[in-house]
Length: 226
Image (cartoon, rainbow, N blue to C red):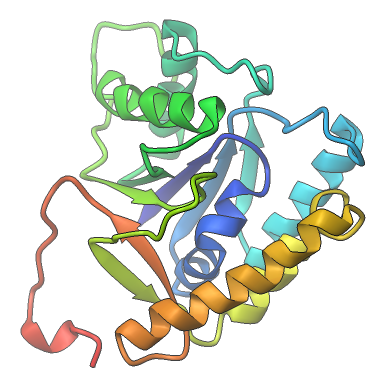
């Protein structure tokens, strides 16, 4: 399965669904992380530092990464951005898209979701100047990397037991974001706690939450996590 995980900035995918990304890669799926921006400027980072950190995080998770380099903090829902993402969808032949949850306090996150939702449609068009073959990803799921202070109310949870360390290590690869700034060090412990909490909701050691607007189906009732 070809899977595309779209994020506003390098580290959003790792924070929201790093365990699931690592698990999907381990299962043999072809996972590509797409960053809309390089995430800079930040107090302790630079484009060069962030690129090195994001490459290391992708390596830890066992996936590929691509950056579109739209401007951070001023990302706009535009035709240009839509077609850029649609081109990546087509080149990757993505069957599944993961995008940020659509309610957020960060404008870049909201813009990313709108862009990716519309790019899903654009990617299937035939008479359009885009690379790759037309494709319409069958599924679009939302992961949580929101800046709002509220608890996720997910549609489903993915068991990430055994992949917690990969997620944590991928997050800590961003030393400029979660190690050097003291105020952000607590983010990692909060993520650890969330993993355990959501795992407890389905009787596993750890899990990550997701939302869907479209129904998903089961081929058998015994595929449910106990």
